[in-house]
Length: 432
View 1 (tube, one colour):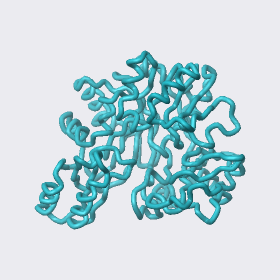
View 2 (view 1 turned 120 degrees about the vertical axis):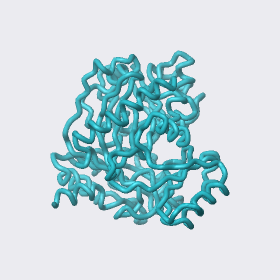
View 3 (view 1 turned 45 degrees about the vertical axis):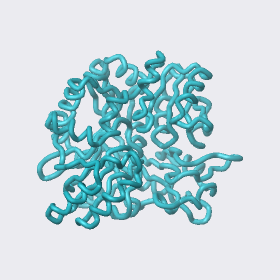
View 4 (view 1 turned 30 degrees about the vertical axis):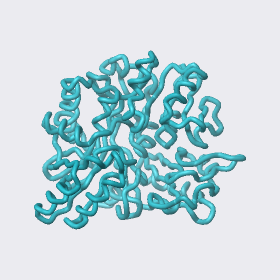
């Protein structure tokens, strides 16, 4: 079989690596891919000239490489209905349809769906008028709120407001998100600890791959603006077997039943962003695909042939599939261009040094993201340039490996930025 993956980041690199382990696969094409995916491997080919959102370009690749399966891995393509379009042409595609993926690309619809089927959510109101939204905030008691663009905003559409003035400022900023911010939500700020859970679904059944804990803020101590994710750990300690049972009963089971009742039986990867509060687990959000950087710590743990899992999901045979994952601790760190996520244009084109040496570290995986390769040199090309993943029998062992590898990497001109406290919550629990 030949596979096409649409995307360019660490998530897509992790997927390409997982598919590459299957003996049934000959070629993996990633469009556009990045400069690390096809490095020192014959199985993976990239198509830098074809953007992931270029449907006609994808069709040309499908014909050229005689593609048997397309993995639509990113939110924009799912929102644009790539799975529907491919299926209409008789091309096998993995991922939710446009209507199924609305659970992510339309937060307004998503929250109403959750309310309808009694899934645990924070209190909220949605608005399409900035003045009405501001008036609503003025009548609330002083409190911390979240203002969220209803549409896709590259993971940056949720703004924390410490008071009413900040909330009104955030509401006014919704215009900067274009169509994504035309409708926005005003939500209570839940208090607790966040985690994410990933499952694969076939319209009827689901199976959980694992849990992760992301670190969204750009600086240590969870300070600074939100990013696409600065790093994460796999299977954090707070997610106990008892918590998983409750999540299945109160969230995943009613989600699958509700989507079926809505005529949108969900097939694909389901990403649950959740918060453990004093009143139990509540939903932060649903996403319709693997997270990034969560994919980099969870996908490598999958021992079962990933292609087999995907094929069984497409044929509604997940209940007959035994999915095995290892118990290794993993920690991921995003190596970023200095200035990310605000202004990092001056870093573009600068050489990334040390990636080859890091790849030689035992127990360390390197996944490319915003980088290109020219004349056997790696060059920064985006905000998150690469992801390092450390593996170990304990979190401390995994952490020592990944930060040891990170210490030998640089971007010319001292332009590499990364957080040095990834996994801090579990590290504090270990100390206790």
